[in-house]
Image 1 (tube, rainbow, N blue to C red):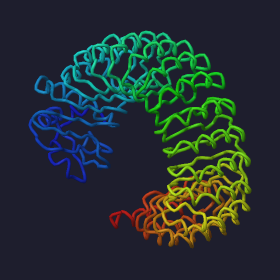
Image 2 (cartoon, rainbow, N blue to C red):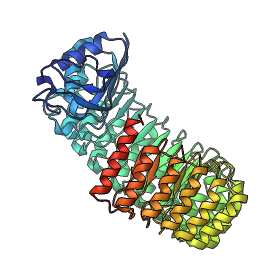
Image 3 (cartoon, helix red, strand yellow):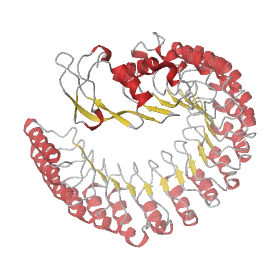
Length: 586
């Protein structure tokens, strides 16, 4: 957007109520006065483009910056608006000492600070110097680097009220983490600390943990994606027992391996208040699971255990399953992507029956197969609290799907069922559909059957049963070789799905005829908001039909037609359809 401080013209006087915006001079002074004098919430809108030559009006598309304040406190929320970042920081800096101690919440996430010389000019440190009363600071995804960490460190030691600091994805590296830790140890009030994805490494973690030891009130710690490996986990394990109030620990994607798991196990067992632990993507394997399982068993308050993508296999999952009965409050268990077979599924099935609070079970991308699914199906009736079951990509077929369908009605709390990427086929879809009317979970809202080789026959069979799913909101049938016949069946039934909000039919074989049937159905489904039709073959004629639907669909807000052989003619039709929606105020 250029340097807004150099623009001339009138000054956004009626910005929050305008449909169009004129950017004017003295923006910094205006923001400063707004912060100091105005006693109401004001919305700054995003200017999509600014003509600095003619100072013309610019379209406004979305809320951008929000100031909320009274005489005592100021909250500044400005995520994802890099074009105004320098103006905002200069405005706060200009206001200077009149803001001292009043800014309590500052969200400047996703603002590409590394691209705007804000770090090099020292503007960030100067601004933060006037925010010493801040309680929550969010600088996520700004890539401020070690230089920005240096500036932050200069100011943060004076923030005596700081409770939450988010520096997720800032490329701090070892040097930045070390500099930050030196001053962070003085912020003994901090309860939430997010340093994920900062490439800190073993050397940086050694320096960081030396400073973190003073943060004894810490409740949430995120060190995911920091190249920790086994050596780095040693430093983290050394400091963890000092966080007696810790409730949430995220160490995912650090490749700590079995050795790191062993080092962390002794520390984790000391965290009696721990409610959430995420160890996803750490190559823990069976040996690591043997060490961690016992330690986790000591944390009886656990509500979430994330151990996805760890190569646990059947034996490792068996070790973890052995301690699950100790968690009376466990609500979410993620064991996806662990090469779990039928035997491992049996271990999980036995344990799940004892976890009476379990609401979400993720076993996606494993190898449980037909036998494993049958074992799970046999125990599902005892899982009265289960709301989401993910069995995506497990090599299950028609026979086991039929067994699953037969017990679903007893899962009365089930809201979401994910069976995508399985070889269910037309026969399995027909069997599943025929079972649904008498075994349907009464509360089901999401059904995922994407990439299941259903074909037209499977889609037609399923379409006949869909109206029985009274609360259905999201249906995924993408990647199923569905053609016009299946699309016509689904289009005809849409008018009876009066709670459906999202329908995914991408990566199929829909032609003009199928698109026409769907278009008519869309106009009769008043709740539908999102229709995914990417990678089909609707062409210009299909686009014409769908364009007509855009002008007549009561609530459709998202239509994906990428890769559909639509040319200039179809594009014009779609443009007219969008114009009709806009003209009707949708």
